[in-house]
Image (cartoon, rainbow, N blue to C red; front, top):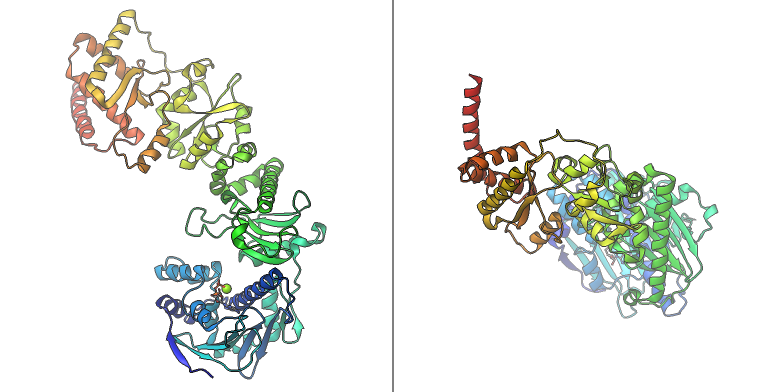
Length: 629
Ligand code: ADP
Ligand code: MG
């Protein structure tokens, strides 16, 4: 017998244990799910190792659960890889499980209830302390040189380690000394069986409770489709993901060429946090001939389909494939391209059969899915699957496809127009879109920065160019019939027209380098001015993103477009005709320019603008008082 030594838990483990020991969480039975899942992982490692080495294992791969009513213990034994002394210290004593670390951190922050946290994360080995006063782990590593070790702890501050002389079989035995008030419940065999059935039915190895074999051990994905019920799919999905809801969609396929594989892919009903902390939590579990090769493999599906959960099992890969070489394995690439096609075709089918159902999918996973603009090989399919809000939608929730848009397009309309803005309200008032409103031409509304990358990457849909409203060809729009006539304004006389040219030159003088040009607009109807991009530039929203990236805080130089039919411009013209250097012209030019900057989100210092507004208000209220007399 080796000497018994005492070791302190790492700080973050102590913190987590403290939470779990005192937890009032009602669903304590999940401790069994966690211990069984660890046992299963340990068995998978043995199976992976022995099949890779081509050997046969003489010890049966299995999990046994024994309850002892008198002692108040429940014991979980597996014939898996076991642990050496070092591994034991590393795995149970510091935090091994990334979810556990995150759980501890989030519990500390206290923003979410412990119940929902424990429910959502696999809490791993330490969850046993929700039910245990003391736990004893006895383990013998598959490494023949390693001695068996015993680990005990009451889950408070420290744990004890001792090397054993006994000739124990390979694997791990965990004796859980139950808290008094829970002993009856968790030494009841019928109850233990029901817990296994509920949470661990799909474990790949036989689980015995007492003498009885409990789980079914079917690789569901290898069963013929017509034999599997919706309930079985849902049960397997919940086992796989810990989700409590049924999946939104199930896709079960079997392929023979160019590569043989079976796949079972689920779409969850709700989306995760696609770009957040849990972004590594994606991927399909890869099996070769029922042997688990890698959990959550990242090469089978691209990131934008990361919402899909499930398994792939192939006959065609060698069992001794190393996880490192999977990435550039040609067979994996072939499986992957088939899977992507299947997923996209399935989504197209949903969209075609039931638009409401597709909307549900889109609302749950659309944000992540949009990153698929980078998948050039599937550009056409992707283009048929993306959705946007639009000026033709009833509200900000409405979704439109490019095809829907085209079905409503004007006769002869070649382009699909879009505009980026912070909200439906803002876009509804944007001066840039006045001409579209006037002509009744639909504009797709983009609310997320990624939407513009989507448009940029796709470039066209079904032969129709995707064009930002800012860059629309005004001549093309002019050709459409006006549906919303402005109050007609008197046409300018030839003389007024030449004065207007001089007025514009004057405004340019006043604004100096602030603008590249001042010119008559063809897009405005209700607004006096707007800022437009000099030809050929990126859209203003794209420009903003690039400025953030390059930390450029200067104000971009743009074209000031002027609406000569607006009453304010007409008044300026009259004033200018009388006296070319009337200070009102300067004041109005600056005011119009800064208001336009403000609308575009570029005005950093509002002092001058506010000062001018107050001055003008003071004067105009004076005139108002005069005329009301
Ligand atoms: P996770 O399973 O997510 O890694 P756990 O807290 O459940 O986190 O387990 C921590 C680690 O302890 C495991 O990764 C594994 O290395 C080791 N371990 C736990 N139980 C066993 C077991 N029955 N056999 C072998 N190793 C185990
Ligand atoms: Mg675990």
